[in-house]
Length: 76
Ligand SMILES: [Zn+2]
Image (cartoon, rainbow, N blue to C red; front, top):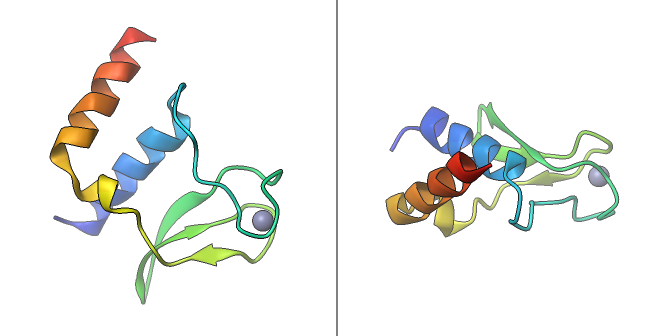
C-alpha cells in the first residue's frame, strides 16, 4: 500500500469522533499529530513542537479497520 493512502487514512482517523486520536509524546495537550511523508518515509508530526513519531500503528494497514472507520464517519 502506498504511503499517500496510509497518510489519508491517518488524516481520516485523526478527524473522526469516538476514537482516541494520536497525540504528542512530549505533551498530550498539544494538538493532534498529523501525518507527513518525509525522505525517510511516513511519519507523524506534532504541530506544536518537534515531536516526531516514526512508528505507524498497524491498524492503519488494516483494510477492515479502515472500513470500520469510514462507517463511523458516515454516521456523523
Ligand atoms: Zn508536541
